[in-house]
Every structure is written in C-alpha cells, then in structure tokens.
Amino acid sequence: MSYTEPSVYSGWQSERMGFMGNLSGLGFALVAAGAVIALIPIYTRSWASAAVALPLAGLLLLLAYGRVLGLTADVWIVLAVRHQIAVATNKNVFFSGLFAPRRGADDTQPMDLPGTLARLRLLEAPDGLGGTLAIMHNPVDNTYTATCKVTYPGLALIDTERQNARVAGWAAFLRSHCTEDGAIVRISVHQRSLPDDGAALRSWTARHTSADAPEAAVQALEELMEGAGPAATVRETYLSVTLSASRARLAVKGAGGGQIGAAAVLVREINAMHGAVSSAGLQIVEWLDPRAMAQVIRTAYDPEAHQALSTRAAQAEDPTWQGAARGVDPELAGPAATEAGWGVYRHDGAWTVSYQVRSFPRSDVYATFLQPLLRPKSNARRTLSLVYEPIGPGRARSELAREKTKRQTARALRAKTGRAESEDERREAATAAAQDAARASGHGVLRFTALVAVTVTDREELETACAELQADASAANLEVRRVWGAQDAAFAISALPLGQGLPERRVGI
Image (cartoon, rainbow, N blue to C red; front, side, top):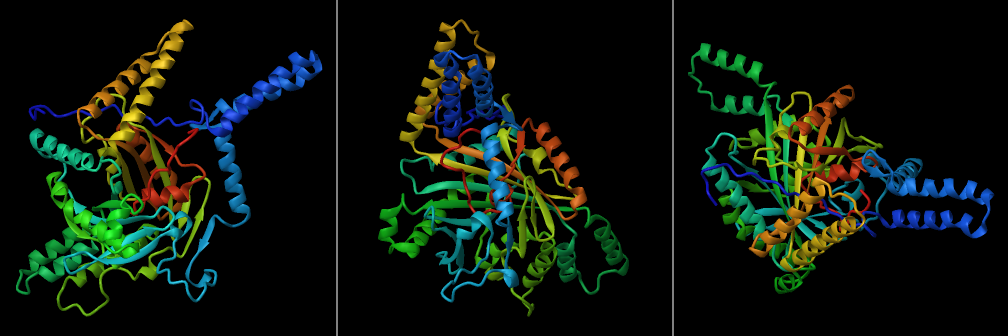
C-alpha cells in the first residue's frame, strides 16, 4: 500500500439474515396468512367475504412490510407489547442496596447490576506481572472479558504516512483474530467524552507547585484553572477483549479447567497481543483490576461521582496518601436505581439515550470520519462503542458466497421481469464481489456495529443534547436510530466497556 495519499474506506455491508428474504419469522407468517385470507373470496365466490377478507389481508401485509421509525410494524408492536408488560409488572424498574430484594445466604455475587448485566460475575485473576486483573464472566454465553485503559495519539494532527500506518496496524490486529474457531470472539472499543471540572488538574497542580514559587505566578495559574478548568473535557478510551471458553475448551482444560483455566487462557491471549496493539499506535495504560473496573461501571451509572473519584485517584498517587484506595469497592459498582423508558434510560441522577448506527457512509471516507461523534460538549457526556466480532475463514467464505448468490439471483429475476436495476443494487453487488475478492487475498471479515449514547444530569437538556448528537452524526454521514423499547440493553453496550456484543441473528430490522 502506498503511503503518499490518505487512504479512504467504504463498502460496509448491512447484515441481512431474515427468515425468508428480509422478513422475520413473524413477518413471513403474516404474509402467508394474508395470502391465504385473500384467496378465501375466490374459493367461496362471495362478495360479502371479500369485503372482510381483503381489508384484513391488506392489514397483515402492512404489518409485515410497513415501517415505523425504521422498524417493521410487527417488530414495533412486539417491542411495544413487551415494554408495556414490563411496565405493568415493574420489571423496567431496578433497585439495589437497601431496596433490593433479600438474597440467599449463599449468594456471593459482588455486584448488583440491572437488566442483561445481572448475569455477569466479576472474577479476579493474576495478570502474570504481580498484579490482579478484573474479568467479567458471562455464565450464559460462557465468555470471559478483560478490559484495559488505553491512550491514543490520534490521527488528525499527524502526517499522512503515519496516519495510514496506524490504521493499517489496527487492521492487522483485527485480521489476526479472524482465524478458524479463534478463542477471541469479540473486540470492543469504548470511548467516553465527558465534561471535566478540573478537580484532578487542581489536585495535581497543588502537589507539584513549589513552596517558593512567586505569589503572582501561583495566582495567575489559579485564575487560569478556574476559568479553563470547568470548560475542559476529558476522554477515556477502553479496549475490551472477550474469550469464548467453548471455543478454547482444549486450552482451558490444559490450563486447569473451569473459571481458573479460562482466566489463565485469557491472560495469555492479552499478553500475546501487546505487540500488535502497540503497532496500531495504542498505548496500554493499565489492565483494569476489580476496583478500577467497578469505578468505570459506577461513573457510567452515576456521572456525578466522577469528580470525587477522579480527585481521590489523583490523591492516591501521592505516596504519603493515607485515605481510601483508588477505585470503588465492587459491591458499590452498580446503580442505586434505574428505570427503562420507551426511549430513555434513567439511572441514579442521570438520563441516557442510546442510538445505533444503522448505516455507515456509502461514499469513500477518511479514517477520521467518526470525529464529529466524539466532539466534546460541556453540558453532556457522550460514549461511543465499536463492537467487532471476527469471523473465521470458512464461515466468511460461505457467508460472502451466499450473499453474492442472493444478489445475483435477485438481479437475474429482475432482468427477467423487465424491471430496471437501480444504481444502489448495482453498487451493492459490486461491493459484495470486492469483499469476496479481498477475503480470498487474505483479508479478514468481521461483524461490526457502533452504538453511541448521550447522558445528561439535567432532564431539560436531554432533547437538546440528542439533537446535537444527531446533527453531528449527520455531519459524519451516519444514519443513527434511537433504540426504542430497549434502552437498558443498549446502555449496557454503548455506555459500559464490558464486552457486550451483537445478537446471533438480527431479523426484521
């Protein structure tokens, strides 16, 4: 690859895995029922039955093919009914601590998390370097996730050659996990952009200011921090790696079996990937221990706790500090209370709205095209999660071949019926062929999605923050959709670096 010109990227393909075509199982049943009902007047030869059957058949077809805010009508109705049932039974409300239901004496779960996160278990494992590592275990999926905090020098202010080299390094890192039955099943990048009140900066300055510094210089520095500190923003970036114990069962068995063996295999995997991560320009600050992981979870649910915890973490770096250790006790990681609404998620003293990126740019874009989404705001915090799921060569070959066959069959059918082929269909077919050619030449294939969330502590500012986010997404040529009826599940992916991933199949949306 030449580094003389900036590289451009395109060709994201939407996943199509309907039960029949683009129809879900329920959608197909509605179409079949509509077709049968529409045939009833023909067999009965009755105009009276036609007056009833034809409108009913039309309604069923409308439910199958109609769209409401991007969702099919049948999916929308299912979501609405499910949400109303949850509201009626208070399953959309979560309380912990004093208000939590009494547990059995043998329940040793160290965290109390709501919704889909309730199944997670926080484990502790040696990192091989004398420290400890927090591992989130999902017993349902039998997966183990470790998270590290990283820093990244960025792409906007460097020359084209180094920019392309860093992106190529990241691509090589992802491609290295596209192996047959690879143990790593998910890689997630999570970035937070949040307002900073300058508390950590003031604490650091107080510790590093000389006692004999000129009074005028100290006063000028204090005035500068008071003016610029509250307007500053902070960015935190995390990288999560998820291992499937089912895929790595032989390695897990060789390492001792069970949770201990799975944790040992995961530690071995993350130690082996340090070189590949460094080649992409990422610098690993630390792999999160249980207290650090608990702090990340706590500050996501309670943004107002970020100030006190950041100040304490800065003070804990002082060797003479005698106060509480940095981080949070895992028992206090979860929220005090949450409530999942139809389009908003309330947690402690904050409100969050999550969006899924439903369509990436159709035109060629540069590597910095997501930058508008990460634009800092003084009145809200934003989080962006990129979820990658590597696909092995065998499965990638069959899926890309199936996609090409579907598109070619559809094009041939349209040609026989005399329908003109649109330019979009022609480009999609060319993209599918190019992806198959790239796979054959050694490139990897991944499932990929992005979710972005905006959080405010003042309810009146929520819609303004949402409008600003949608405007920035439009500036990045992205189509985002509010996650209606599943804001709590979307929050678990978009606002928390816990390695939560995509469903096995996405049908009807």
